[in-house]
Amino acid sequence: MPDLVIRGLDAHYGATPVLSGLDLHVESGATVGLIGPSGSGKSTILRTILGLLPPSRGEIVLDGRRVDYAKPAEVRALRERVAVVFQQYNLFQNMTVLQNVCITPVKIRGRPRREVEDEARRLLAKVGLADKLSSYPDQLSGGQQQRVAIARALALRPEILLLDEVTAALDPELVSEVLDTIRLLAREGMTMMIVSHEMGFIREVSSRVVFMADGRKVEEGPPARIFDAPQEARTQSFVSKILRH
Amino acid sequence: MGYTFQFGQVWPFLPRLFDAALVSLQLALLAFCGGLLLGTAGAAIRTYGGAWARRAVKLYVTAFTNTPQLVQIYFLYFALPDAGLVLSSFTAVLIGMTLNAGAYLTEIQRAGFESARRSELEAAAVLGFSRLQQIRYVVLPHAMRVLLPPLSSHFIIMTLGTSMAAVFGVEELTGEALTLSSQTFRSVEVFLIVAGFYVALTLLASLAISLFARAAFRVRVRPL
Image 1 (tube, chains in turn green, brown):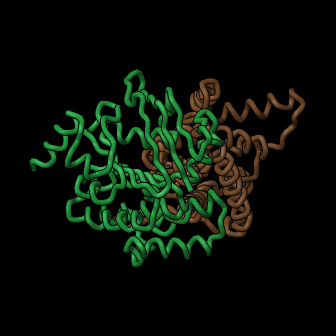
Image 2 (cartoon, rainbow over the protein chains, first blue to last red):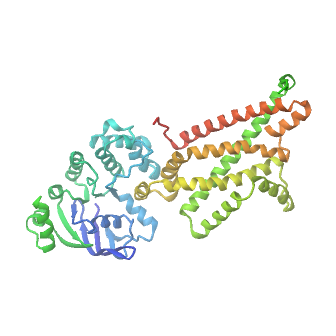
Image 3 (cartoon, rainbow over the protein chains, first blue to last red):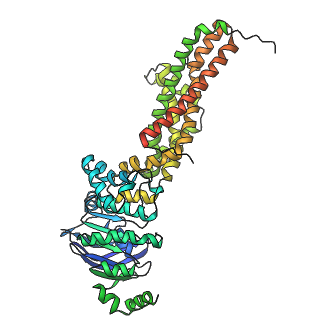
């Protein structure tokens, strides 16, 4: 049962601060929606958790143990439990769909190929791609590629799944197929952090919503409160702009 | 031109030329494979290594790409015995060609390493791939696709370059041809046949390299 706590987190890109004093708690089974204007630090939180951007202050605590991002072994251990899906899918272009899903469990974690392939077929069927096993990424639509990326992340059997604007690069008619997949995961109780601009979806699927601006957490609460009765002026202005169109 | 070709005196020596061609191919293959290993390591160091390691590789590449290969081999051939290491001429040529290939292939492969998409490497890192695993599963397959044409043309240059070994008395194709032409006095015929052997060797060489790339890195060769 994963339990992720972020305390007083600062992060910088070069000299530019991108996160300031962030506190966040992701308890097991929660679906935390991260919203806010572009550049507010939503994606940066995910990158920092994964160790792609080391924190400059504060701490990230997984199951009561502080993660030391200076130690590669600790970062790897964390990445075995926390998986991510990127906006641009980032599939391996030289591998088929099935190979993309299987390579990490088989080659990096040393699980038996047969067992992993069976599981990969099940996962790909679950995301609606049972007939695309031997296709290459460049033969698939964006929505299909994104669902492969989700299956690839699930094949790691993660305890926490981070979704970084997974629909932002998709054509509007492809968005729903990806969102359906995520809804399914939320129903199954997967612990997730979701960065998205799909406000209707965030509202529906999140157990808690965090509104970010300028690298800070402005407001946090149940979706109904954040969207219908925000307390902070910054949140009110953001939400009213979204609801206007 | 009033020359009358007389192949009759040369045909009986074909098996000898064939054996010599195998020596040429062996030399080219060994030197290329050794050079490929050196070049892959060199490119990895140039792309991901520390400052001093990068500088050392750069010095090696500069030294070997800015001096004639013949001079490099002469140097090994004459300098190493003074250091107490006596090499057969085949070994001296092989080492010289390998070191030379390693330098060129470092430069060629560096371009391929840099062509790997940052986003895919990031995905691999997040999936828990070590740096070596990233190179094996992500960088090299990409690099191979980009590098197949320059690599195979370098292999062909090396195959033809094995004729240099004749200077050191290695019984490869050109060396054997020199011997034969002085035995039969049919130099034109001999060198015409030898030219044919070289064409066959280079065709074989480029076929071998594309089969290797497909088997080792699943490089897809798709019709455009």
